[in-house]
Image 1 (cartoon, one colour):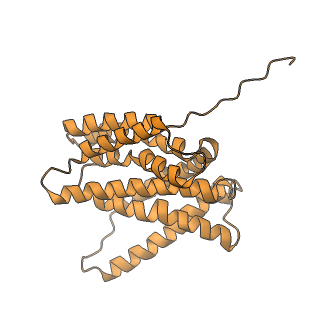
Image 2 (tube, one colour):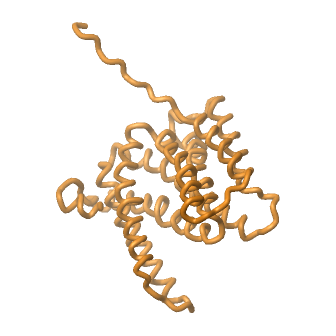
Image 3 (cartoon, helix red, strand yellow):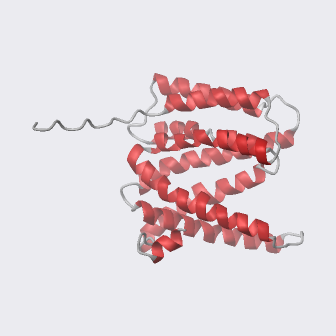
Length: 255
């Protein structure tokens, strides 16, 4: 998707070592590490639960933004929202439940969400206004693909398991790469420049609805009371940490 944009002159690759360094760090934070965490975690938890935990991204973003970005400080409303969000996440994860394997999977999904939070703040601080959004998207996905491929080759070569290529898996990866990453990141960088990292990250509150619905319909997964109630509380917290965007009033005619 992004390669096509470059081919037709809609976007360009980063220029110079400085731009490539910035987008490569972003790729590690927002692509390589969280994708690995999610892939590992989703082998141990349901897709519905993973989607709900991934929706905690705005809570992590608000916390990191408050610590490292001017103008993103926590007021009372945001602080209460963070507490609500944390409460919801705890209800979802049920750390008191027996079964360490599931808990580790949940921690991995939360780790991915935390990395996304770091990524939103990093993008706002080092990319927005410095690297064009389309260039940042192309550079980040390209460098992330290179790093991830190198890691995959090394782990495959050192693994004792037999490797095989499944056409369905390849097709799924291509679809996720073109739509879920390529197209999504074009919109991602533009949204951060327009609305800021905390507000931009709140788009993920739609993730649990889609994830749970698809899990129920496609995979026949069951959703426990803790996921439903915890998700509702977490979303309430997410909405509370959103920064209100001031909309300019249209100028009066003849003024």
